View: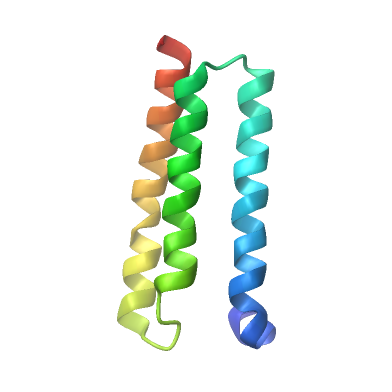
Length: 88
């Protein structure tokens, strides 16, 4: 797995990927002319993802599964951000 290959660098690499995701979402928001609530929403989604990256015990399969399942909330936050950014 990539987590095993990255070893102690897994958290910094995942943090960089989360920042890249938020950056790409911000660019998409600009290109789609979304309103301010969208940017608040993707910031919250990014913070939620970072929480998983830094607070999950990577040696505990149950915590890893809970963090993985928590990604559904991240998706819901992004979806709500898109809707609110379009409607408001």
